[in-house]
Image 1: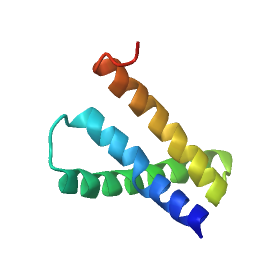
Image 2 (image 1 turned 90 degrees about the horizontal axis):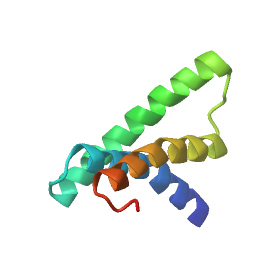
Image 3 (image 1 turned 180 degrees about the vertical axis):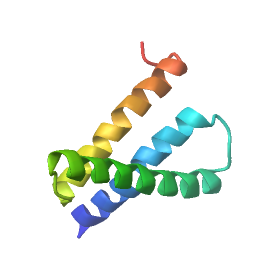
Image 4 (image 1 turned 90 degrees about the vertical axis):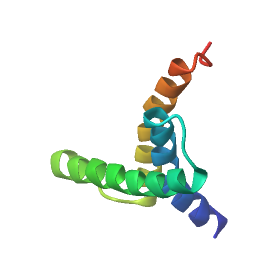
Length: 87
């Protein structure tokens, strides 16, 4: 139960939230959360459409977690580099 909630939040919020901080510096938290959910769902959908079409990767809970983290890491690295907190 807790694992499912964690994976849903990680897949539905984390990639888009980090990417929204890369795109926009300011904004209200409610707008940012709504935008990040839409952005996460669209990024994961496009990623899995391409992964399934070209490499035959099935959609599973583990694959969703891996792709979600793989989409988050470059955005987070760029955000920290942009704000000089990377050092």
